[in-house]
Amino acid sequence: MTDPDTKQFIVRLTLLAEVLGEPMTPTRLMGYLSSVDDLPIEDLADALNDCARTCRFFPKPVDIRDRVAAIQDTRVMKTIRAWEEANEPRVVAALPVAASRVEPVLTPEERAAREARLEVGWQTLFANAKTLAAHRAMPSGDHETATVAQIHEWRRRG
Image (cartoon, rainbow, N blue to C red):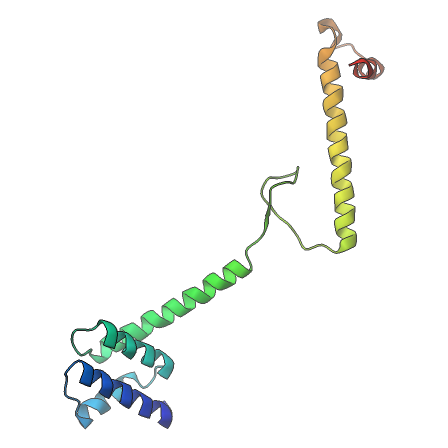
């Protein structure tokens, strides 16, 4: 801890002792300081503020360290959550290939080529569905022996 940090901690701890009606001797102050001097002052300040809001009794150094650990854990979890939200894959539901697929980042040329392939795929699927429907509409005995030309003729009629 730097000198300004030490002064800030002493002021905050003395203020907390006053709020909670606890005497603060120089020896006790040095004991608290030596037991938390490895922690960042920002986290210590947050922990002492939290103690002032929620503690009924003056906290021991281990209680302050526990609150600092909880503050640091919360900060880490918020950072992880923010990173996950920012990097969450987009789900595309309108693709014929798969209902939930990650959409890659494409250049305009790649996007146009992909859309053209998808359009051809839809047209082929639609044509095959019409052919299948025509094949099913044929008289029952013709299913196994029908030629492609006959199927197309049935499709043209139907």
